[in-house]
Image 1 (cartoon, rainbow, N blue to C red):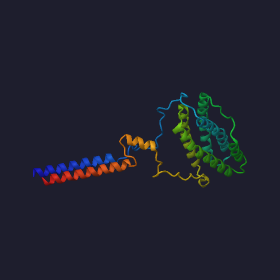
Image 2: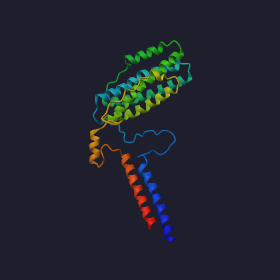
Image 3: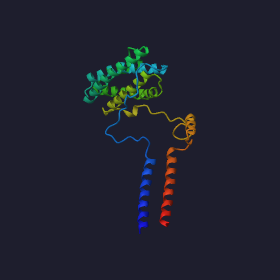
Image 4: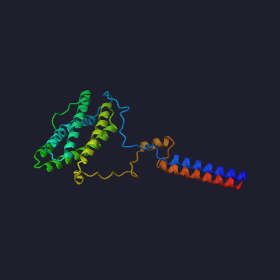
Length: 261
């Protein structure tokens, strides 16, 4: 009788350990805890000393941030004057004020790094401003303003990501981080108008062909995984499932042994 109770307690304990182990093995790595709202990346570790190699792509990025403000600020001022749509006017106020703030950050970085900035919008940007000025009605203006700015933000968004991920210069890195937050906010503001013509936005290019799978195979990464004990070509999730299966088999075998006794 005592042996039977001991066996049942052991069985419950083994099952509990098994459940906890499986939960740990199969839980996604680094899963974020539940929270209200979307997390905002901190600035921890982002310095602004002008240190690090400055590439041609870095300089072009700083110039493009300046150019964005040179046409979006006057465009947003026009939105406050020409639009009869309260939502569009509010978008214009927010984007105009935020671009003034971003322009100050950009000018400071350019001065630190010795980058010469333009003082006039480029040809395309000026044509968009002229198009807005020529709008014959508030409704026509609203559509031009919202669509031109939404398309422009969509184009600069991936460019910012490339610079943020690759630059060696700390000041450009911090500016890219800040610009990324501004651009995401502006796209959301523009979309809040409810009149974005999504069908007119450019479509994403087809994915490039790779060696295998949905993610390009990086030979350097595979070599690093191999040298560090990883298994090239085998998913970590698969390995964890195999380990979990082995653990289940071991527990079942142990339970059978104790029952037999």
